[in-house]
Each structure stands twice: as structure tokens, then as C-alpha cells.
Length: 299
Ligand code: FAD
Image (cartoon, rainbow, N blue to C red; front, side, top):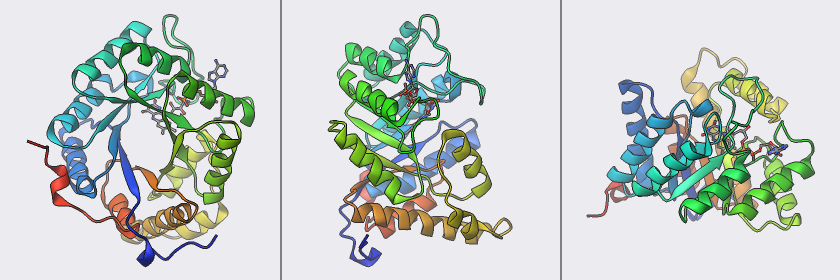
């Protein structure tokens, strides 16, 4: 792939950022710091995750509502089907609509305890496609869903996983964000399969800058993401060098973005883990520049 140099990137990329709801005042301050650093880059939207088993229901809502009321950036709320009746989930969605939130990331969700398998709540939504259909009946939300370039571990086959994505689109989703991955070809192959399957949908690559190689490797093993051997070599010997690790992490993720850009990608979704600097540096390399006015809410 003939990727352009960073210096030649036109600055025409768009970005979005994912945060998790803070658990303490200190984490809240860190999150808000991250939002203030990243907002001037003019993201298309920022998204706030929903804890496993619906454990962050109030905190997700409070975070999304604060972003919606204090910044001009469209905020998206993640919502899952785990451990809740349809009525409970619908009520949350209605509260979002009333708070002015127009974008939901609709997910089946992971069980509250890692390693267990998903159990549909007796009165709950069956899966993400079912949730999308339910949301469609509540209000004309913009709905994003999850997609898996390396196949979801629960899926019987790649074809079944694509069919599941199609079911989510047919139910009314208009965008999919991918699980993280480390090789650009992995995304390109998936994009081709989605198109060959007759799906016309925007697919945002989920970019995970790796600062803690051991933690990301564990996460990758659980969700079926391949960790290339070159990545292990790049992080070797950096455990006691946090600053160097940050630089390597930014380089690796920026390289991935540069190759994706060469393959036509123009929107990058960053898993920020509520830390701004890495995503900010990568966006900068992609040609984006901060515009201080972007954070101000229109009067
Ligand atoms: P679905 O699309 O419903 O399906 C998942 C898998 O199960 C698919 O492989 C599908 O083929 C299979 N499947 C679905 N229905 C059936 C059925 N009826 N019979 C047989 N197989 C079926 N988790 C959270 O808890 N909170 C979050 O905020 C969160 N945010 C995320 C954001 C992104 C961008 C991504 C990629 C994931 C996120 N997750 C989050 C993780 C997600 O909840 C898990 O990956 C979960 O296991 C699947 O969710 P889904 O929406 O993809 O499920």
C-alpha cells in the first residue's frame, strides 16, 4: 500500500472519541480534561460507554447529558440489553431523547461477569438487532452498532456474523464502529466482505492506542483480536519506561491510521480510555488542528 507521508495528509479526516463514565470526582476531572483537550479538534461525535451489565446506567446518562449541555459536540450514548427488561431500556432511551441526545450506540452488551455467556433477560431484548428495532419505535434516533473485523467470539461463522450485522442495519442502524484491530488489511478485508454482503453502511475503524501491552493482549484474547508478533517486539522492555511507551503507542496507532487513510478511510474512531494525549497526537499527525471555538456551545 502506497501510504502518503504524514506531512502530506490533507487534514480532511474526521474523528470521533469514545469515553467511559467516571467513577469518582478525580476521574470525572480527568474525563473533562480529556474532553476539553480533544473537543477543539472538532469531532463528529463523542460517545460514552455503558458498563457491563448496565452497571453505569446513571453515570453514562449524567456524562452524556453534561457533554450535550456544556459543549457543541454531538454526544452519543451507548445502551445495552443486559439484565434489563425492554421497558427499562425503553425508558432510558426516552430519557435520552428528552435530554436532547439523538445518537444511540445500540449493543447487546457483555455479561456483568467476564467469561460468562450472554443470557437474554426474560422480558428483555434478544440482541442488538432487536434493540435497534425497539429504539426505532421510540424516536428517530441516529443508531450506531458494533462490528467485528475478526468475527465476534460468540458467532458460529464469519457468514453468521455478517448476517447479524445485516440484521442490525435492516432494523435501522446507519453506522457501525469496529472492535479494535491492529493490521489495516484486517479492516480492508472486512469492508470488502460487508460490501459483498450487500450492506451499504458507514464503517468506522475503532482505533485502540496501546499503552499497556499486557492489558490489551488480555482484552484481545477475549474478543478474538489478533495481536501481531511485531507488536510484542515493539513493546518489549518498555514496562519501566512509561514515556517511551506513550511514544511507541502513538507511533503504532498513527501508522495504522496512515495506512487506513491510504485505503480510503476518512473517519477514525478512537477508544481514548479517557486520556487525551495519545488520541490528540495521532489526530495531529493525521493533519487535524485544534480550533479553540469548537468547545463553546452555540449561544
Ligand atoms: P450482537 O450484534 O447482538 O451479537 C453479538 C454476537 O452474537 C454476534 O456474533 C452474533 O452473530 C451473535 N448473535 C446475536 N444474536 C444471536 C442469536 N439470536 N442467536 C445466535 N447468535 C446470536 N459492551 C458494553 O457492555 N458496553 C459498551 O458500552 C460497549 N461498547 C462497545 C462499542 C463498540 C464499538 C464495540 C465493538 C463493542 C462494545 N461493547 C460494549 C462490547 C459488546 O457489548 C460485546 O462485543 C457483545 O458481546 C456483543 O455486542 P453486539 O452489540 O455486537 O451484539
